[in-house]
Image (tube, helix red, strand yellow):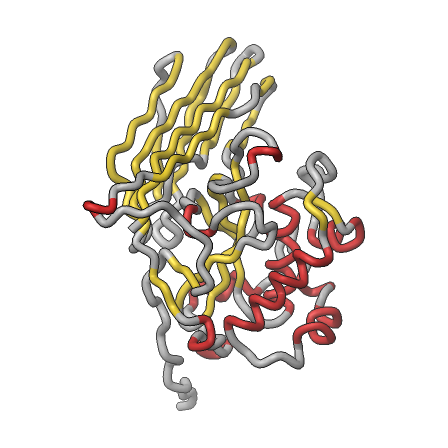
Length: 301
């Protein structure tokens, strides 16, 4: 089991007359990601409301802040009990057999224009055997085609833009991989966390975007940018693309300061707690949600 001590601090200067904030920084509750000790501190102390999405486990926090300084400090202890599987044993799930809650992740979305990548996906990946290894080939193709380059994209950069520019940051890698998976009839979604294991030369720890693809009845983790150690990724949010799971959505005029993010692995072999490592096996923090296709409907009088 992996235990991560998570600390996220966000700071803002809010202009008059104030601003509304939607935060998505709480670690998600999933079948194999358990949130233990947890605390939230606001300065100034403000009332807030929490909502947990019943399907994704995303936890959204809403508040209104008056003019002045605002600081949020979130801390949590998160245990990751990964489901681990041999990649060669994981098939794709036929579209007709997908659970209803997964279907949305086949459609094009704002940043993942999969409908414009059908020919590319067919030519590059259509001849490969269906399953986890085909999705791994998509991940590797994205890594070969795109160079991680800080400060080269904006909040408007889409998968198509990244394909043209051949450079970007982690969210751009994720959007392109998701679009290619969907163009190959594999449901894929955007996931947010922190960049545990990233090279310190890239700068201080930061939020991180990665991919979860639905294969064999589970959502499996892929990190197309290759920056983080997938086993150390604490899931914060999942959605169709970055528009669904921004760590902060703000309505009003503000100035934001650099976030402080820290994710520390606990090593305690006597408690069966081991630091994350790169693994060749497939990893998931979800349980199996596959459901067989319903019997054909019958209509008539």
